[in-house]
Image 1 (cartoon, rainbow, N blue to C red):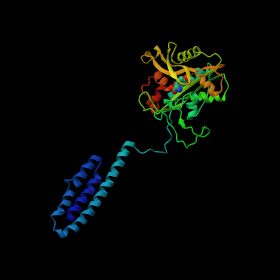
Image 2: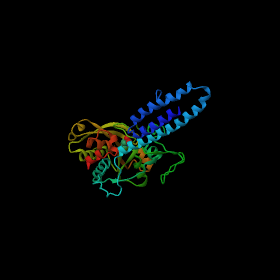
Image 3: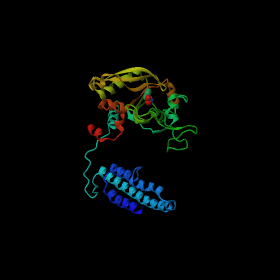
Image 4: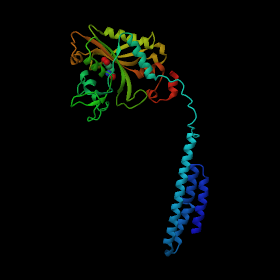
Length: 346
Ligand code: DAH
């Protein structure tokens, strides 16, 4: 028996070192240690031995089994290493000079954000900023969005650890921190710091608990606008939006207002646009933003007199505009850092 086992082990040592792939390895291993394998056959033959010889034979077999398993193990490691090497290619010579990366480009979202901001700067808007980690007050309460409003639902909002503290974003004791669900919070931050008239835009990142698909992402970008002055009317809102969309999408772009509800504007609208200039994508009405006239309750909250001041506000999604303008049909492409997408828009 010992001779048989030794022969199997010697053969295996040679054969295993010659193997070049995982399937070959699995096949050979089965031929030795599988149910009908040669090693298994020797193991089984123990039953035919006289009783008193079995313990010794068992010990012997176990010793060979351990050696065989070690051989399998080291062969498998070698094959995996070789496979990895094949995938990675030849070793990199780190002493070679850097080939350079060529010119970079600005990300599509940044391009579109800059474009919209520069169009709006021309009619007097300045850029305002606010934190991505917000408190419920700026994101909801001050925007006339009460505690039981669905926008605060745990399902579509990211609340943060109540014990954490976030730099200089202060909050009341019973208030929660969250990742802002919209840039509208910057309206409140601005009005609390500044007296009217106000004319600001606030570009930035927002977050919602959305399941990612071709048109939804848990992380997206908006541009908020707020204009407060004496005698601001819906006419100003419509005229400024027409100006924005014509500048952005071409002279034949048209907008359509649909009545809607937002708790911080009254009346409120959703705006659709279309533009022949954009070909097939531009031939259907496409929803692009929410807007309306600032609700007097919001003015009262920030200490502006609603009898003196009036204003409009809007918030638009940057991704949707970028996708429409550049024919990107899945929002996820914008976040995947695949250079094949970005090289097209240098
Ligand atoms: N905050 C809204 C959203 O995220 C968009 C919006 C609607 C902004 C109306 C506004 C507004 O400023 O007046 O869906």
